Length: 146
Length: 107
Image (cartoon, rainbow over all chains, first blue to last red; front, side, top):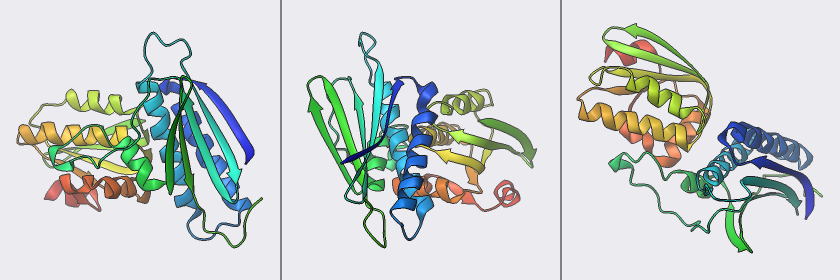
């Protein structure tokens, strides 16, 4: 995997747009390099929204006593796919989520559901005391990027 | 995010501009909480550049509160990026959605 950008931000919603805009910008550059066909705006929006959701969760579930309240976001290129890792030091969580019961007018519970629906592949690992959420989406391309 | 308020017929129109995310959504929640519970509103989303699940959640919460007060919340002028979030979550089923403001405030 080739690293593209690594961003470490304080776990604070004031920095949410930095995370989301970076994701959109990296996706746009990646799509250009990968000669993506089809809807590039949709590809970029998927990364912008997924990273926004993941960063928000990282901020919300940080514990007050936590020493390192930061979120690291790593973008990689892997065989023509843009991979993004969201890493935090929060307590372990279950990345599997059911669709929210919309008829009960839920105010929350949409974040991980949206990520799963927007991205092609979502995986989770617990490494030492860190959570790592990995998300990928395959662009439609005319050739494979390096 | 900016919130611009105006009235059409008996509705208050709230035109949102900018980003509706976890950082800005509480502002919308507070703004609507300052209106009378029985006041029906139209939320104009044409100039919302980006919405995430927190923004959606606040809109759903407003809809739930208005429902219990027998008031209405309507949405108008959803752009493609906003529409996508409502479609994936099926939240569009909770709202009456209109293409223009006057139709929303007429109905």
